[in-house]
Amino acid sequence: MKIISKFFENILNILPILILSTIIFVFYCSRYPGGMAGMAPFVLILSHITCTLISSVTYAVASIRYQLDHNHSIILFTVISFLLLAFYYNINPFQSLNDFETRYLDLGFYISIFIPAVIAIFIKKIMK
Image (cartoon, rainbow, N blue to C red):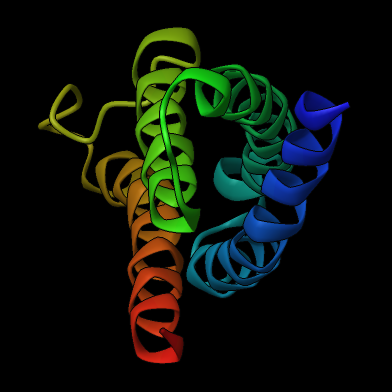
């Protein structure tokens, strides 16, 4: 029963990051042409769903053995998001050095996840 409560606690902890990250990325993509960045927000949302499930299960299982707080949950989600974007979706801003639009669009994926995660960690630190 404790695993299930930790699972849903983690999802509620990550939900504001997901929403803010998607909003930031949509505004970031709005300056690129539709053919290039039209499906990019859907890739981010699909990545968020996958990362939320993986990080929530990992957090729930690890919280049985270790004493984890919300900041650990946010860091775990961010690391899993970066790894999933880099290795599964092959989104690497350093890979396409000649195509500047693709490079900055790829960088937008990472920025839109990193900024809300840092904001959430600062808010959690202030609230303690």
